[in-house]
Length: 226
Image (tube, rainbow, N blue to C red; front, side, top):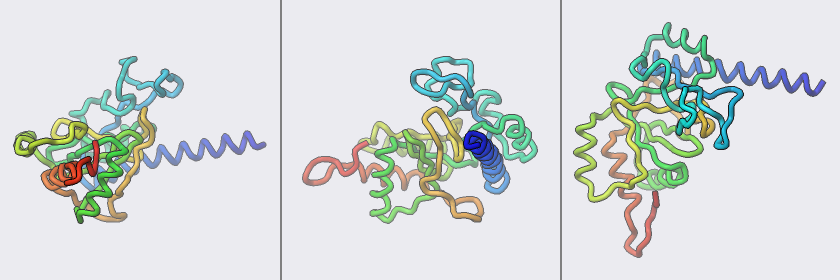
């Protein structure tokens, strides 16, 4: 009896998770005008020594489940009918945001540094929008920017932490409640419930604050190592 009840609970959990991904994808695309598409996802029965295997053809995929594959990134859309068609057929697919253009971009950093960074930015009074977290990296969503502007911004800095990554035009980012090879994707700072399209900070303000938080203190050392 316990085994039967356990199976039923697992089935209910899976159905709920699948519905949550579709609902999230529709919210992002229709309510917030963020172009999304289903990611590669994970193979249900295949695991490697490093964990779950990606469903894409590459047996050595370094970002299992966490990238576009079929369809490709250019297929990202805000069309509700297309999104429902995709996730009806692939309910376990992660939700991938195509960054740049009119969509959010992001600045990401390692998870441990990300937790410290948010504390440092809060202490500076820095206003942040949504923050996406995985077990390995945290991503601060920012207003759309072009590659030229990013290049000018980074060129003007004496130094920028080497572990920062920039998800701009032509890039992508997994959104909650996706699951990838590294684990669950979640909101560390969620958009306000019931709000319209989430507010996003300017990339320059975020990079300036992160660089300031990582600079050495007068007594030596670093306030935020990443």
